[in-house]
Image 1 (cartoon, helix red, strand yellow):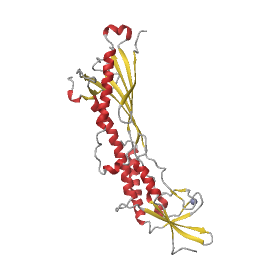
Image 2 (cartoon, chains in turn yellow, purple, cyan):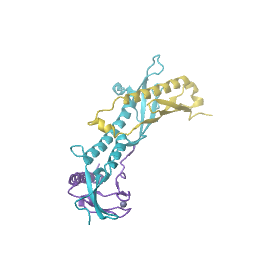
Image 3 (cartoon, helix red, strand yellow):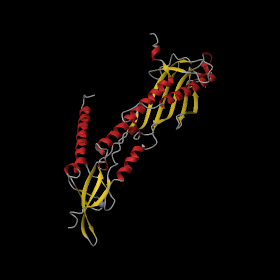
Length: 96
Length: 82
Length: 166
Ligand SMILES: [Zn+2]
């Protein structure tokens, strides 16, 4: 199961990277674009937090409950590349 | 959720030619041509209306646009309005 | 109800288009600031509009002298510096497909979901993911710094020769 969660985490991280790369292509042209650009701030994505429930396999449910609560914390550096800061997994309905 | 589509409004004024204190005039003062005073040294400044005519005209246009926008905002804020 | 496959898009496109919308909105705000500066501050020839004030000052040994100070109109009115300081986008997507290729990073197809909790039918490939994306800005736009420099360099004091002494 851990391997499958890791695969999802990697996939999400790469989708975010690909998504941010789409934004870096030249912005939609506004009239007087050059002049306007000078008044535009350096607004950029800085952080992403993703949370999802991960269903637990039938045979482990008695012990761990129905799902894991996975949380990914991602910082986005100035060049727009997401860096995974941490992943936590919690079983909120675990019997222990 | 956008946190603060920011409009700074405290960025105007010019330095007093005598004491360098920041003088702020209101749009009304300029449009009515009343004298303005430096809060630092009390210097009295009189608007040269003739020399400033194009600027005053532009300010008048701005003032009307602001008044219109404020009226629209007030209308939109009325109970029952969306 | 059959799944509407048209609404499934790569997760990257979803993230990208949401961020792009915010960036575009910020661009429109910047345009409003730019238009204000252009329309109020400058005339048709692109020259700074100025307001002239006259004042009197005592000059030791000379007496009272009359001066004129010319200041850019833009120093007299608050410039609306519009822009987005911070934005937070929250959305939940349902992952409907994960590509099974050999690649290191499988691709995800997603669609917008109501919220993260309604995930009872989830399998490991169709989970709901809740995203909270924060955007912030880190500096003052170059145009703003430039305009304030231009304004302060264009405050001019001249002695008025004709009506000089009293
Ligand atoms: Zn003064």
